[in-house]
Image (cartoon, rainbow over all chains, first blue to last red; front, side, top):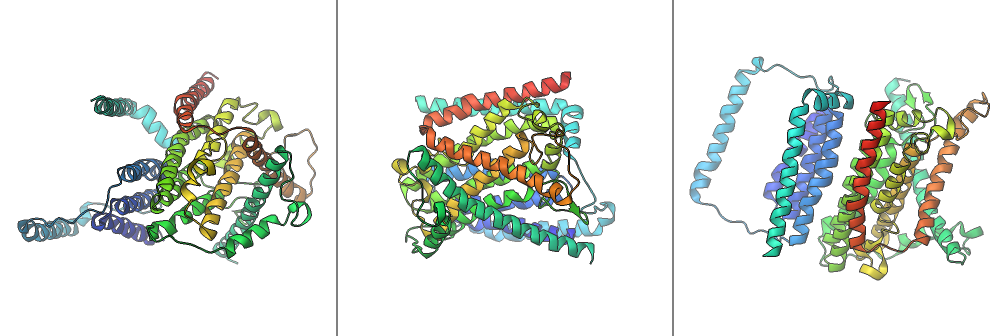
Amino acid sequence: MHLILFFIFGMLCLAGAINLLLQRHPINSALSLIVVMASLAVLYLLLGAEFLAAAQIIVYSGAIMVLFVFVIMLLNAGVEDLTHGSRAAYVVGIPGVFAIIAVLTAFFFTHRADFGTITLGSYYVSTAGISRLLFRDLLLAFEVTSILILVAILGAVVLARRDASE
Amino acid sequence: MSHLLVFVLLSILKVAVVTGILLTTVAYTVLLERKVVGRIQNRWGPSRVGPFGLLQPAVDGIKLFLKEDLIPTGVDRPLYIVAPIIALACALISVAVIPFGADIQIRGVHMFQITDLNIGLLVILGVTSVGVYGIALSGWSSNNKYSLLGALRSSAQMVSYELALGLSLIGVVLRAQSLSLRDIVNSQSAHGAISWNVFGGFQFIAFFIYLIAAYAETNRAPFDLVEAESELTGGYHTEYSSMKFAMFFMAEYANMVTVSCVATLLFLGGWSSPFGNLLPTPHNFFFAAIAPVFWFVLKVFFFLFLYTWVRGTLPRFRYDQLMGFGWKFLLPLAILNVLGTSLALALH
């Protein structure tokens, strides 16, 4: 049951990501990214992280992607023209990617006994557990990250203001 | 019968009953609003169709079905058709985690709640966040500058007030020590009305922040700038007709009902009676099952009436007043409420 769900939502995630690259209008790409975020939330649920799945939906799909969609709508970004890359990229790039994927697959397959296994659905992380981790064990990292995000917001405000006053 | 079969059958029954009741409630909330706003404005509301106008929603439904379904030529068709579906689906999904009665179970299946999740409150917040897309995409796909402006304003308003909404709920979660809605109600139903979160839990500031933020979330008066006819010719649903417009309409009222249910559960004690243990509890099984549902419905009806009352009384916010109020007043107040509640709990 869990394996079926994993395959369905894993495939959905991949399909969304590939669709994001293939779509020409930015708004369709943004909507595909929302599908990717939602599928990731289901994968988190399969691993037992219920709070993280809810936070993924609320923060990523519900706030960050809304911001993306907002910007695309405000800037009225139109359909992008497909630029034809250099021939060297086609000749070397696509076979190169396949070669890397083949090497990695062979490596993972031959060494799969060393990686261990997980059983989907046998884990559970409660919200209390995450809060204990964040606010007790990893408090310093949490506070430093908060200050980092604050600096990012201030930087954005300063940059936006300077553009407006010029 | 096997446990799985019982679970599936009871779940289908619960979903059918709850969805049916929700859609009927939505239809009659429209009638309630028209009649109450009418009485506030010293006129009868709809009173011709059926006794006291009670058949008006049925007639309105038939009218919306039979209207011509226009799709303008310049619209982005897939998004145009999907947007009202997203809005209505998100409005209807939130009711899946709302408990409306006591904890009575048949073979392990909760009868008065569709599903009891550990993170029920976060699911409601998440679904509300995704519901913003219904409005944003409808404005974008309509190929109409008024729709786009209305949709952008509405999305910005909803995203801004979501923050104050979420923060105002943290005080309640701190007191209940759980995100499950059933646990939150159980933690405040010990002594009747004085132990409800809004009174005994000292969450009255959070209560008012939640109400105001919820009025802004559901795009209702006095925050309904984005859909007022005199402002933006109808905003994001200008180009919609017939069933798609009806879906937006139903989504707005279903959101109202969901918000009223959540306010009842979190601040007013859900299905618990305001008299607590003062009245002797009868040992009749039906009474024990139906009385909590009756109290829940009464409180939700009070909130719906309050929605309509505020709509008929207060004038509309201007857009910059609206955004300033949300960011510069409600958000700091909600943060202060979280600080105050956690301080009180830590020192207790």
